Image (cartoon, rainbow, N blue to C red):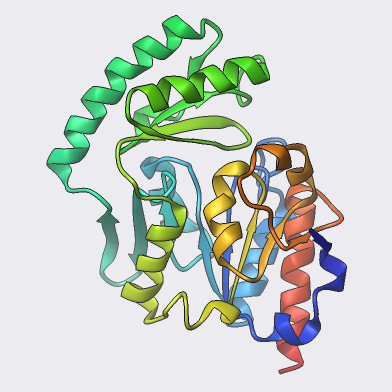
Length: 266
């Protein structure tokens, strides 16, 4: 990983789309500070397309798409994208149809019982009631942080049940299906913005912080991690190209500032 301060200005100036994780990338200690909301506003005002790509639930993503200064949101690690047209309301596109998601939820409910028996310290995430497609096990958000061994066992429980499982900075998320953050991001960019993620790769930049961002780190040539990624780097299958000097929200604000300044030079 190279220091973000060395990111060539000419490459930053080509960026038109900013993709970003939320937890511990935009947030700091679970809060969205003013510097980040201001950074999002400045990016939008400068003409960037801004899209959070998160593991957070549908209920949260509905609010984000409606109220935040963003163009769309990908949620539940790629289960859907939401985009709010101020004239026509909310558009929701899911990776799987309603009947399949209903079946998946029943299977995941049963799996949640198994996980809590296998890992007594495991907790169902407080945001689980607002989810459409996955099961979130809280490993570091509310309550004691689970040990590395406990986290590994939670991941194994999902895998043994035939589910996909990904670790973020706060949760282990599991779901039935092969979709991920990258696949739904590609679909959103094509459907709504007419962008080809392959051909237009140089026009896009992703910022993240955890192992579930690995598909994004691996695909986008302009992949950036905030400094706290170093704590989880050993669990990530792919490393980002760049890393900021500052952690979480402060790191994102630095990236946003550099992008706005570079765009002004175009």
